[in-house]
Length: 519
Ligand SMILES: O=c1ccn([C@@H]2O[C@H](COP(=O)(O)OP(=O)(O)O[C@H]3OC[C@@H](O)[C@H](O)[C@H]3O)[C@@H](O)[C@H]2O)c(=O)[nH]1
Image (tube, protein in one colour):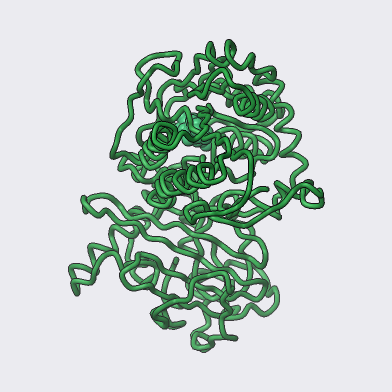
């Protein structure tokens, strides 16, 4: 019997088991109680990738605390043996290496990773208290970084990130200088270790399940580039908050008591994983979260500002910010733009109906609660038909500027500030725009910004909605058509999967949009 709420997984992960007569799937969230008859429980529930577990940190803690209570309660009622999946993260940013089970760890209780680290520590505590108080037959495994076929392509952890980046020729994003270490365990070895722990009487744990061969993140990146034959280059981004500097398991206990040690070393495991990712149809997957969790630190907020995005001019007189590598996708005609606000909740939806497909920009504005100096960020999900691509588009300076202006003018709550007043961006000087766009792509972006209301064209290339072909101040080309500005096009559609807005109609009018240079 398999329970999952599919928060970070997909049905395809269990597709091959679905028809099996002894396999049963139940969609369930472990934070709710569950009743069934069973002999053994593997409680593996919890998002494990930092970007996923930091997405909704309170829920993450609930999964480890309430989920473990519910599963321990189940094991207690039916007298089942229960294996609790713990993690190397309970050692925090360890001061000793390798980490043996006797080490109590070095964990920040109030950091961005604490929801996972502390949640899993409490889960261990609960397991041992259920043993002491109710004689529940527990096993506790501390799993170190696991990877391998079956991973979600948008898992967000380092192995899948690097492999996908390498396969697509994108920059390999190393956080920090890449000198931090991890010890990567191949999925088959991890599963074997867990099953052995469950099916033996010598120890209840905790037992480290991991591969003691330690690699720096930079070494990992280089190995993946080599194995994929990729031309990707490595870029360095700042380290997310509380990122452990070293991690390596001491597996003496597992060797002695479970007769277990990993068989698949990194090179072999990566080769199999690359093969798996190559064969995957990425169109069937979307990001479970926006992967913006790493922005939670001030350092991170400043870093992301430097990520490149393109302001892609779309017909209708405006630009849509899209990540650099996706800039060619958005060349449709914009018929209608609506913005919607959730009062008291810093989320805004901007909906753009194009002549090709619906693009929905799901903008999440994160402000600084305690420190107003922290910049704002905008994260966007673009939904195009079935495909959901999630983007993280930092527009910190633009929004910072805007925030200042608006609060000076009418004292509006800066949290409500978003792309609804795009006209203000036009007031930025070119230099400011360039400063915000980063050094590399700035030239082209600047051209895009400048050209938002005009497309140079030597000859008439057909009717372009919203534009008139003429000789004007900028030369021959397509200029914004003053007479077509009021056309709003067909009503925007809203996918059912999106939360319903509480208030609508806050979006910019076509007149406003026509004036603006970028969204
Ligand atoms: O794109 C990336 C992603 C990650 N990294 C770095 O690579 C290292 C590993 O990061 P991951 O996100 O894969 O995972 P972490 O080791 O931080 O956390 C993991 O630890 C063990 C498990 O229990 C969990 O799966 C998870 O919390 C970190 O130093 C991280 O900063 C990059 O350099 N680039």
